[in-house]
Image (cartoon, rainbow, N blue to C red; front, side, top):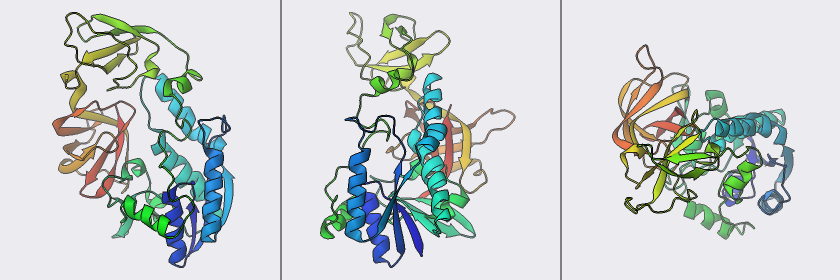
Length: 357
């Protein structure tokens, strides 16, 4: 079978390509260049990643091509990213990058090259059951990436392969070292792909102007000044620069909300302040992998952020009395953040999810 692998320069995609070649598939690697505004800066690793991807392809014995999706990325992912921050929300561009670039622009390109399937190094699984494709959690709970793939469609999943679905990360590293794949010791990348390791506020300030305003408590007490609501996210602790107050508890301060109309940032003291927990989490722009909405009721697990254990939840669809679909959790969830995603599971099957309102 002709399979085109997204080679990122990391160890996961390298082992993905090696496994497919070892299974006898006709494998081609493609390196996606999604960002070029400052790719020769200290923060952007595109050049280094391309060198690593080419070394991997040479070692495995497959061809590699470089495809530039920077225009598509800017139009479909980055413009949304900026608009959401400007609106006071906290988007997750990695989810959009999967739906709009890896499983759209890249998938379309691969099909034009005659691929039957595309493969990535995600820790997730896919299976066909009764004519429908299901997205499964990766077996390694510490690396499961189904959260980032929850907006894929039936058509996208039907063309997807995830060879690392059943492998723990340590085994992936062990395979890479055993087979002397050149990047076997490379550290996993962190951060949003186009931001890299740079200070986040510094990056945003290039695109969104500072709009200073007051920091206040829920009771209305003024405790400091913020630099612009776009630069803060719910649950944030660092970077608030609020000194201790005489009548305060001495506990650290956290962002608990934003009042966009008044340009004020609402902050509270203590990680367990009740303002940071919600049992009802409404969702907008929902997407269901099966193509139909799950049944109302309980028996579901859900997470409101990546690497959070599934929490028991009741799913309530939007109707005449509920403007938005809602997840009602048995226990209050810590700082569900507008703009991020709430993702619903039934056992190890990822059903889809929506944007937290």
